[in-house]
Structures are given as C-alpha cells and as structure tokens.
Image (tube, rainbow, N blue to C red):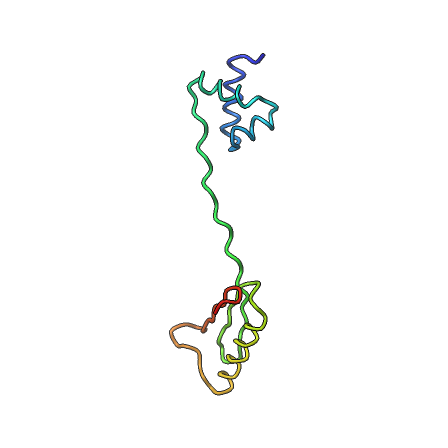
Length: 115
C-alpha cells in the first residue's frame, strides 16, 4: 500500500503529465477510483483540461498563369472544375486581361468542387 507521500508524488506526476486521470491511471497501473480518492483526500484538484487544438489548415495548391494570375485550390478539388477554371484563366490571359492591380495576383479559390 502506498504512503501519503507516495500519493502526493503520484498526483504531482499526473499533473505534470498533461494526461486525463483515466489515461494516467492506466499508464501507471493504478485504479482510477483510488487516484480520485487520494485527490479528494489531499484536497487536490485535477489539472485543467488541455485546450482543444484546431486542425492545421490544408495547404493551397498554387497554379501560376502566364498573365501573372494565380489559381489557388485546395487538395481534393474536382478535376473537371479545375480544368475549366484554368482554361478560362488561360483564355483571359491570351486576350490580354490583366490581373487586378490591388494585389500581386488574382486568386480563384475552389473548395472541394464548390464554385
């Protein structure tokens, strides 16, 4: 049976681990109820839950065109839609339509086949 001092150390280890109580108890081969009981006995609160992290933004695929326009699409865009957009942009380039002056490149954003 663990002593009071051993439980104080275990609870400190748990707090430093960043794990949920159940995860820590399983990793350390402890009973979750015993860990919770010692927390109450010692007047210790569980560590704050980690803030959820947002998934990373997908990387845009950038397709430069001859008229300095830039077609930007996300991975997974519908190939037929992309081909149509690139063809129209290339045609505009041949006709001398220039990119907007407010930005270095004009961007057409397509998200997974939506226009």
